[in-house]
Image (cartoon, protein in one colour):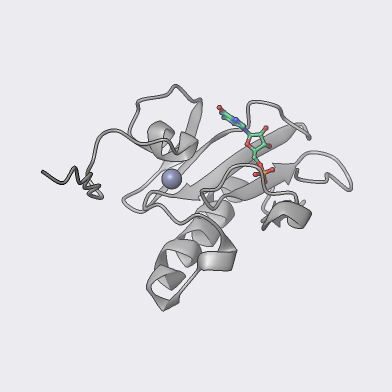
Length: 125
Ligand code: 5GP
Ligand code: ZN
């Protein structure tokens, strides 16, 4: 008999670190949530405020983005604006950064925006 492994989107078992955080299977310090987006503190902050903003639906990288992902990625940017305003950085400003691929410095292959704020030139990962 053929052994076939099926993997459904609702499969509760996933190797993706950020999918596990979205599913509350891994802990995280959550800063913002809506139906499409989750944002949580970066475990190794590179700025006084360093939050990762992720689409809840898995997308490995901007390098794999299609039209179907436009809304989810845009929703992450809207979340960045809301987080910035809620934390008092609306006027002062903040940085929103996406690392993409090996030479782009991407380590976790679930798209995430680095929201960094609180000092001039915060690099954002
Ligand atoms: P990348 O280099 O892929 O753009 O960024 C990955 C980010 O995820 C890094 O800034 C890293 O500190 C953060 N990170 C890695 N593992 C964890 C984790 O388990 N929890 C949280 N909250 N952040 C993580
Ligand atoms: Zn994922």
